[in-house]
Length: 281
Length: 281
Image (cartoon, rainbow over all chains, first blue to last red; front, side, top):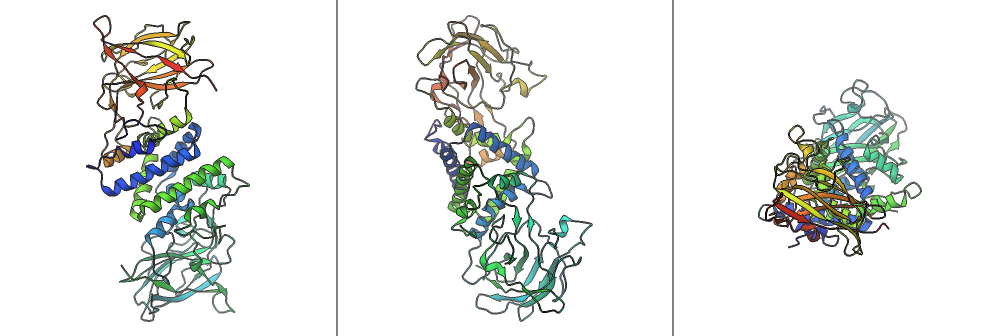
């Protein structure tokens, strides 16, 4: 039992106070890890009193920036790669299954259920694109009854919910359900890169690190089907200038889709992409 | 250069984004340490998505609990031993010098300058106590002109600023200046243990860890004198039930004073304590 905290024993002094009779084993494990790494970090960098004051101020302002429309701590987590690490740890999949990536803040439940081939670009802002492919299981068999929930920004770089009154409600959003062949296709736009919000502490941090705030262009997708793990992912546009420097580290090479120009027809681009679902555990 | 974040390379992927041309070397070092330990912590405990959501919620509520009167992130720092670790790193002193401890949230600048022997207990709530001793340098020579700024709670466990209108302004506060002999004495009360605020996330954390929120009884002191390091410390009451379990880890054995009952006279207790100042670097 450590009675008094010193510079040398500080983490142990705090951990020793955990009362196992009243603390759940899981909370103990999390707090032990947190305390050990927090104290080791502070010792390693020999944090000054002034730097500690800056840290308290940044954390306080991050909390106070949060509102019903804004979650600055998630943005901090995203831009520090924490959200993607947590996503990776919790979505380990068998070889061949489509990989997960972050949900992001702009998903809205209850988008319209649309027939195959429908156009989700209601404002027409952007280059038209045909998305098509199949939902498959890990053995290549089609998955029937899979729901594909898609959403993206328009070519101005904003989601409908960021521009109420300017964009039509449900612009660039829709849900499609596969038939027996597992196939899907719908029309929309080739998405556009955009910056994460920089008018808060996360933006200050990016600037101080010399980092840009852009996300490479992507279309969000959630695929669900009975008997399969929920897939939360993006389809990325490979020729985006930010593809190797996503501000939130969401890109995985397997999620870069071969967007290609068409030779005419009713869309300027075509994006073929198959979703491979992992079986439910 | 790491292009894409994976579960295995996540910390390196984030650190590699730091742009040395635009990031100060000190900020780089701090962010490197923070990112490495944050990612190592999450991997070691295999944080679940739900636990991450709890962490985001706790951090957000901690920021939103902060106001002009309340600093919940400092309370988190205090109760996790971080404030004392930072204090220890930044106040390494030569053998024999009085040790530092945390400032706490209740110091008020501009307390009345009082003559030696004055009574700082304006409400009389508590057992009377004579504080006396000397301010010395590391070689035992008296320090003249040292300012001793003291403050404590009353015997109900509250500071004057916590009970405006109930306690007199400047109750249990005062500044005393030493003469040529370095000696000081003043009257006040034997202080009382009290809980840190538990109506916020720090209180929830203490409860979940099975920890009590009490600080052992103490009188705060700041001693300043030209040519010496500023001393921010407490005088602790040794027979306090919480002396070995201070909720903010502020106790150092050298700061426990020999409070003793008197055989009568005008105070019930006497607290002899010398302050030994380290020379300015």
